Image (tube, rainbow, N blue to C red; front, side):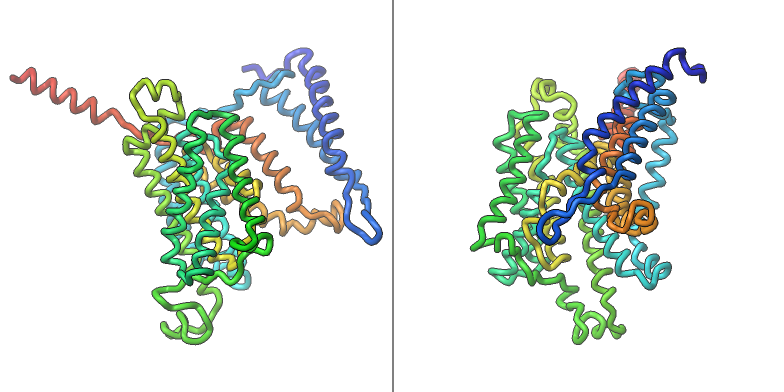
Length: 451
């Protein structure tokens, strides 16, 4: 491919980039150039022309560079760029990366305590949050990545699991370990309830119905004040115990094992709970993919009509995907409730579903390791944004980087769709391998010839 720029490409690309910059200038005017705050006697209006011009410049420069050096045309293609990596290298990376990530996950609390002794609670708590989203991403990956059912209301099952444990603890004084399987079971039942009305829906229609279901659950939790506490939420949710030992200052875990009391013990315990739950989610998903139901999910994802023609019961296939994915969401929600100690409907907005779906899409549909990488990048990236204090010196003391996290998420998704349209990890090992079948067939032919 010639490195020289085609004649006329520069002029056409500049025109296209100017149009993109104009769109950003118009659509982003009220987001970047103006800022309103509640003040005494009304709204305080602040102008941020520098931030607006920077957004326009980024749109113009980014579009121009893409047209000249990536698409090599003023009319960008939608197929994206792909990097050819030999299959042997891909499988080798997958075999090495998985155990490395597992080893890091198992020893992470002790690494953090040794490297950051002054901020160990903060980083371990961040690791707990990331691991929660990893588990949620793996649960949604069953529905979206394997079965190909676009679910925009996955946060509803997250909420069902959290409120199931909170209400069982409030009304029946049931502990975490007893309520955990019950929360997963109730979320699975709600997954089946959602699955029945959407059996005949696909694509955008399915997305709209699941989005509505997630909002219905949130509104019910918000308005059923007598039962759920409404906007006040539920507080005083009990913490998990370690074989009956709590993590209090006296008579608890530290005293039983002869250790000096430290609140970090509870954080480490919570981390290993969510790590075990996430590993169970991963193990079950990988095993199900190799079973007939897992292959039915993948067949449903590729072509539902062909799936029916093969005699696969698409009704049961969809219901199992929804229920199993919902079960893992409910287990994660139950853990979220015990970790926070307080829940309210505001914790389960559509933004949470969007973040979980973005993790699955960015990581790669059907890729387990991709979900882990995307969770670390997206959820850990929010913490990095909080620590970028030098940005306030550039844009002013009122600039808060975390306010633009969705803008950054959107930019990341655009970049991923350009260079890796199928996600960070776009390839994975097939569920069915035919080498053994071919070998068995050849052995049978050899035996037949011998006779």
